[in-house]
Image (cartoon, rainbow, N blue to C red; front, side, top):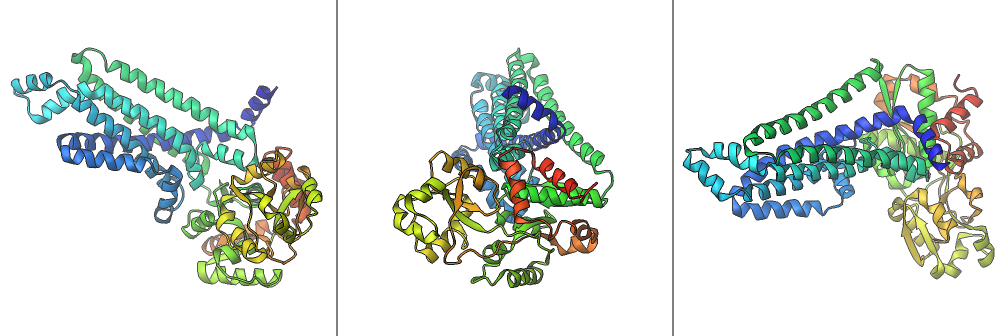
Length: 517
């Protein structure tokens, strides 16, 4: 039954799956090609310079120990988000296996073979290309094989910087707690890894044939890998040209939780239905910091933001005013500092809150956040990574309520609700419009010290884009101001609890309210 359900899901997502497969293939082929172009010559050079060999191999090994997400984050300020930082990180990770195996392969060439080549009058270049490299080729190919496998695995993390690929499905599945989405990314990635591994193993086995044929096989292997990379590039660019239809586009992004993805879909479908613009969806991009950096670096054009988050986290201001003045001040400062426009709010306030199970609240007589002080040593709070460093989250809560949580467990936002349901934590950071609050029998604790500001959601757009395409604001106008907290909670419920696709939930809502035909 589960298999049938998954196959139906694959069939419904087939066009998107093909796109993500090509994106993954594009990343892997380009990164591996760069890794070979760097690792092979570098291996040849350092093998002859013994003092440099230890330094270069040690440095490459040290870089390998740095987590890939950390490397991606380091390159975002320089390269922005998207394909560029992803390819750079994949190439860095792919260099070491090629480099190490090139050195090992060349060092294992029989001295007798080299001496025989010298006796025949071969130059150094001839000895390298006609004797050493052909004999070392099986070992080098094994390094390339490892490099490809690593690239396919690390490429799934490229989703965190908006580079696309199969990681988009995995990331969305974690955010939405949807096993089908996770499998939709994981299974093809595993199949791709096995396919590439088999293909390169086949080439590697051919390297074991007689020495007479080795040189031809070396160039055949190089040709085949280069051809594969070029074909992947050609298909990607052809697909891009085919689907762009010569229409201008707008890039819409979202953060990495359900409500943001749903808001992204609502805006995307309104713009697609009411304008001639083509929408590029860059959903599940990451935290506030990543989305804000992306829009400032012109990597995206539009995304939904919250007034409280903008005031405290982005503008780094303190003591937020009432809802109306908060929106006005945020809108003014964003225009002045970043040349970004805030459109009218959607119509709901998704304030932050602390949530506990209703039975836990009854057991310890919890009504307000202040009541937690009596049991703070028993509290195990589950929070997303962003919660740890934000003034409107952990830092501010500890200052305002003088709370010292017993344990703080950092986890993906999509996993917090299952954690509290299963008793792994007893308190979570929640949002008032989250559809899982009633479904998981949770209660929100009253913010008795009025710590949390207003979190009215609204689209933020680059001013240059709005001037170029004023029809975007016109297209969104029916939606702005009409989306109530209850409506948003219901949409979140459909995605998180009923496991409906964000696209479908958003589409049905817009059609039901006659916003789109």
